[in-house]
Amino acid sequence: MVTDPRPATRASTVDQEAPAIGRSPGGGRIVVGVDGSPDALAALRFALAEARLRGAEVQAVSAWHYPDTFGGPVILAGDYDLEAIAHRALDEAITATKDQQTGLTVNLMTTQGRAASALLDAAAGADLLVVGSRGRGGFAGLLLGSVSQQCVHHAPCPVVVVPAPPG
Picture 1 (cartoon, rainbow, N blue to C red):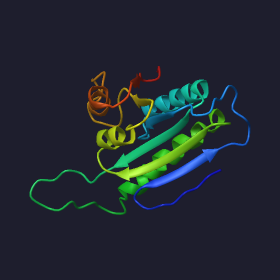
Picture 2: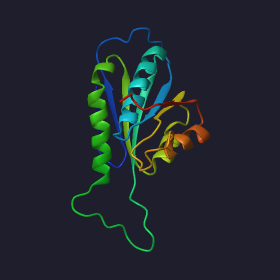
Picture 3: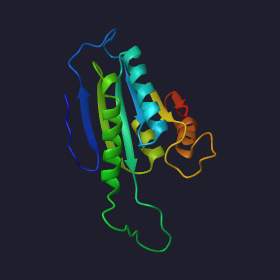
Picture 4: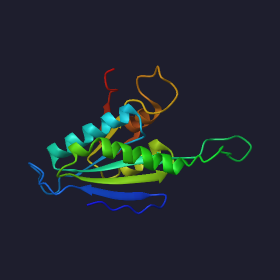
C-alpha cells in the first residue's frame, strides 16, 4: 500500500502483500536517515533487515533546508528545488531497496529542516535510529559525519551508525 501526500512533509507507506516471517504485533519503529548518499542507502538496508528481525515498521526520513547565508536572501540559480531533490533521494533509495521491503511497513517522510534535528524529532518514541556514518557533507576525511555524530549524542533511543559500503 502506498500513500503519498506531497506537502512539505510527506508520509507514505510501502506495504507489500506477502506476510512478514516472524513478525510479532507491536514490533516497534525504526527511524532511518536517507539523503541519497551510499552510506544512507546502506543504513536503509540495515534498517529494513533489522525491522524484519524485530517485526518493526520503518520510518525513512529525508530532510532539506535552504543554505545558510549572511546578510542577504538565499538565491538559487535555475530550477533548484531542494524539496524535490529530497523527495527524489528518498524515492530512489526506496526503489533500490524494494526487494527487502516485502512484508514490511515503510513510512516515508520528507521534511524541511536540518537533517540532525529532523532525525532526532522523528526518533522520539522510536526503538532505534539508524544513520549512515557520513552523508553528503563536504569533509570526506571524517570517519563520522556531523549528522551521525549529533544523533549519537542526542538521540532519545539507541543509535546504529552504519559504516560506508566497501569500495
